[in-house]
Length: 210
Ligand code: TMP
Image 1 (cartoon, rainbow, N blue to C red):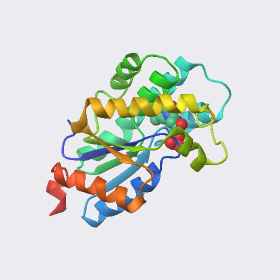
Image 2: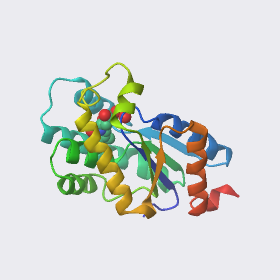
Image 3: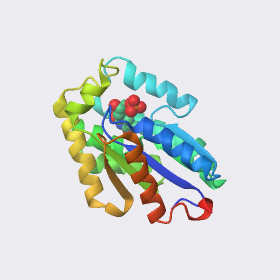
């Protein structure tokens, strides 16, 4: 599935605290002697940064165009950054991946989760993370933490964010071997410990942790 490297995605609603967890995990894995590549979607490449600007900070984007722009970001990102890093044995940690599209465009925008999933899998040439961590907070809590509205999607109503949250949880429930759901209201260190515990228990740190 992922060659020599290790591929970990963090997902969750806006304001869930993913970025803190990405940082903590990257630091811990570097201490174990691994090369760690931290990235995010959209926007992990130069082209992706332009797509991010268009899709999050531009004028209205129609739902299908939105889905295609997020897919284009991922296609380029996987080809240019993620696959090469994994091929040389690095750990890639991404802040959001394909499940964000399935939840936001598929469930949130009502484009159909199955269709958006297929589009995403085509874009990333079927590359799946070894582990996806869902940092779970309610829509209400996410809005409280975000404070001022930042982008087009963050400014959507709580019903949109509720649908997204429900979809993330359903995806995790459907494939528990590929997901870890953590309560985003726990202290960051506790969440981080749960992530490390899961990686260790699954044997995913095997080669590089000795
Ligand atoms: P973030 O980088 O601050 O998390 O913001 C990215 C926003 O883009 C967030 O609201 C989720 C959204 N998004 C999608 O709607 N579809 C996608 O495929 C991805 C990667 C992000």
